[in-house]
Image (cartoon, rainbow, N blue to C red; front, side, top):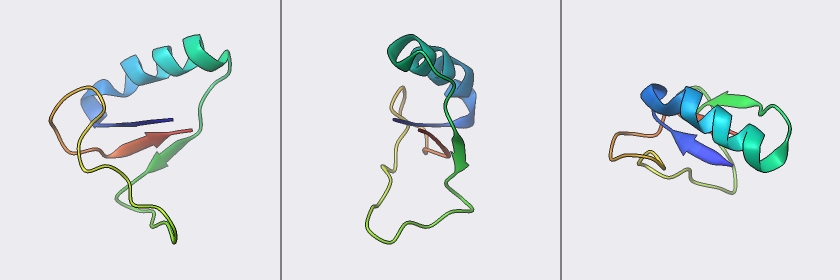
Length: 55
């Protein structure tokens, strides 16, 4: 699972495929709320705001 900014989506997809050998599902964190989980505020790859969840 990766939480990334829009700038790093392609890199995170590549990492996800390398790790799991499958394509991820993408979730827009601006449009989705989770009952039992708060997504990280920062991108996993930089200091920008996380906007996309790859699972």
